[in-house]
Image (cartoon, rainbow, N blue to C red; front, side, top):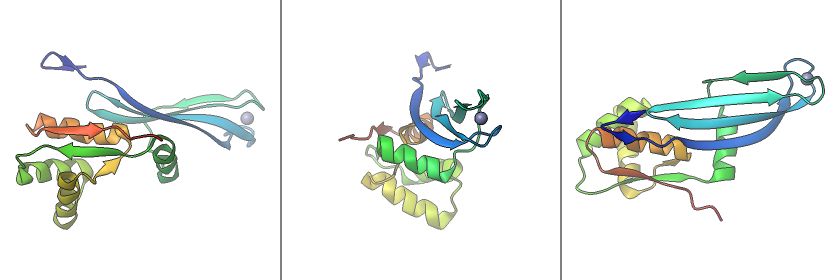
Length: 147
Ligand SMILES: [Zn+2]
C-alpha cells in the first residue's frame, strides 16, 4: 500500500490467550493480532487445539472488549499527539467520522486529542493519526512506554 509514494508501515499488536476449542471444547491456545494495514484496521485470530488438532483462522473479525483490554494491558497505551496550530474543526470532523461520536462526545475527544490524553492500542491510535494526517493535520501516534 502506498500513498503519494510513501509506503505505510504495518503496525501490529498481538496477544496469545486461552479459550475453548470450537471442536472439542477443551482449552485451546488462540493467537490474536490487531493490525493496521494501510488505512485498514483488522483483527485476525488463529486457534490451534493441542487436544484434537482443530485449527482455524478467522480474519477481520470484531475485537472483543476483553481482548482489547488484554492488548492494552500487555502492550500499554499509545497516545495521540496533535501538533499546533490547532485546527479544531478539522480534527473534530475526522474524530467524528472515525470514532462514530456524536457532537457532545466529539468535543471531549478533541480535548483529549489536544491535551495528549487520547489513547488506545498502537494500531488504533496510528490509524487515527493517519486519518488526521490525510486531512492535513500534523498528528502522530506515540508508542506506549513499556516498563
Ligand atoms: Zn479441540
